[in-house]
Amino acid sequence: MNNWPWSFIHSSHIPVLERWLGLGMLWLLLGLFIMPTNKVYHQGLIYLLWLPGVISLFKTPTWYQAFDRLLLSLLGLSVAWAALSLSWGGHPRQLKEVFYVLISLNGLLMLALRNPRLFWQLLAYAAFIGGLMGWVALIYHYLIQGNNWSIRTTATGQLDHTILASHVMGVLCLILVYLRRRLPQMLQKGYWMFACSGYLAFLLMSRTKGTLLALVACLILSYLWKPSRRSLIVAGTTIACSLIGIMFFPEAILRGGFSSRPELLQLAWEQLQQHFWFGLGLDQEYLLTIPETGYSFRHAHNFYAHLAVELGVIGLTLWLLLLAGVAWRGWMTRHTAAGRAVCALLCFSCIALLTDGLGPWVKPREEWFTVWLPIFLGFSLQAARIKPLEKDHCQCR
Image 1 (cartoon, rainbow, N blue to C red):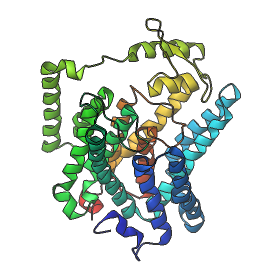
Image 2 (tube, rainbow, N blue to C red; image 1 turned 90 degrees about the vertical axis):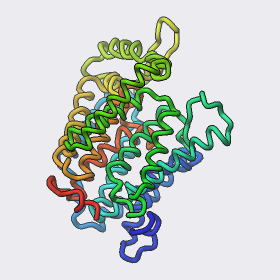
Image 3 (cartoon, one colour; image 1 turned 30 degrees about the vertical axis):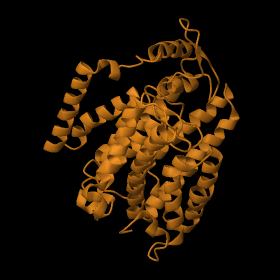
Image 4 (spheres, one colour; image 1 turned 135 degrees about the horizontal axis):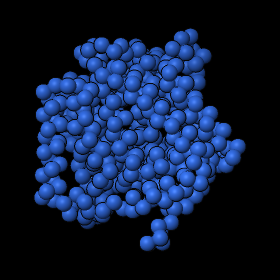
């Protein structure tokens, strides 16, 4: 694993099962960039991540050590409530999505338990490659397809939704920033910055205000989990650049207004009041119609509002407790690069999901990067046995 991510495939020092799981992890993180259909992407997950993950349960005597008891209990409560909601509404087919989440979590944790070094290195490699794919997306969208520069960009493969693609890019960008020292020395010397600029260029050309706001907030709050002069400079520079942008380019930054988000939030609140505690049920369909325009929307374009409408205040509370558990695990390991990455991802996703996102129980797709990846990595802190006071240089050897 000293030169390039693909070297682990033929490495004689890494067991076959771990190489198999490593391919599955790369597929999960990068498959959407290249796959023509979601069906092919899901089939790849079955054979590259889910199957070896199940085999690992029988091949790893200490498999139970991979599961953080606190987070597993909180996740179990959310799963149980989602399943229980089928008794008063929703569709039983959604239980498949619950299964997809659990078996994906198992595959990643088995890799983190069996080979922590490989787990974090592949995560960094995937983030580096994703940044290059950001440049590819811009070249394809504007130069090859010939779209006007005023048109918001999309990415390649299945990342054809501007907002959701920007969520994916934002998450991978933060992983690259925090785990860049897991890359080979050659890539640490500046190449990672080229990949990171690919993410930033994509986010700017996507003109997705919610994602950019989430990234700005994350850069400012990063001082909390690593107080230092550098963090303070980054936070101050970010604030100054944001204020300058608002003062001198308000028409560009505030372009499009709030895109009916406040109206949808109000309609979701009215919908919630009809089923305040229990919600409509898992995946129960509903419509939110804006009286002024007559446009109808199938969800609130706010992850938390949509979750509350489906599963009620109880379901929303259980989900927030799960996020609080992940935040606690990240905060307790903030002296490591991995712990800070979890804090940053959770901060970014919580803000980004305020303006878009369906509920958590969906098939593997773009939403998983903001909804599930921070949680998966929170679990992985335990599986990879990262100690709270472990220093960065110990993590990056």
